[in-house]
Amino acid sequence: MRMRKKKNLDVRFAACADVMAFEPREKRGRWRALFGNDHPLHVEIGCGKGRFAIGMAEQYPEINFIAVEREEGALIMAAERCQQHPLPNLRFVSFDAAELREVFAPGEVDRIYLNFSDPWPPNRQRKRRLTWRAYLEVYDELLKQQGDLCFKTDNQRFFEWTLAEVCQYGWLLQNISLDLHRSDFEGNVMTEYEEKFSSEGARIYRLEARRRLPEFLRK
Image (cartoon, rainbow, N blue to C red; front, side, top):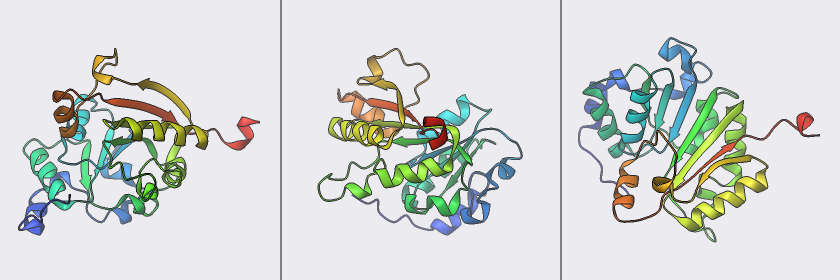
């Protein structure tokens, strides 16, 4: 279900300029210049109302975070939340995941987060899933050689499908959790959806996938 259009978005986004990154395509290959340092660059695709991105930026001030959200109604809520206490290592930006190659240069990103992405029906709309092989190909291009992908969901079938897709693509799976909140994983930062689902007793599934090695290193 799409979020209702918020009023006065242009004015509200302008008021959040300290935490926004406008004209993202113009920053391609130069994202670290926005932060004024050479720290690692982590990107969350589908940040929702921003709880995860804000929590991670607070917890890891030595990392630069870009929080991406195409739904402007959710994004303005995230930006306004952060604007109350701006973080120098976090910026919010609006664009669709299909445009990632236009926004980030090859090898520019250290880590990508996919938290509770929409589990589109696998038979009819699997190509819209953010862990589909075509998206993995994009991530493989944008991530550094030792870059990785972190994925969380409450949907068991989506998780199992993602495991298979990642394996078939040749990425190295690690830190797999079939019940994150009952595991020994430390430093987990919850999203809004995660708190809701876990409070209802749902399991949270998580994995990390390191991008595949170049062909000449795999021989």
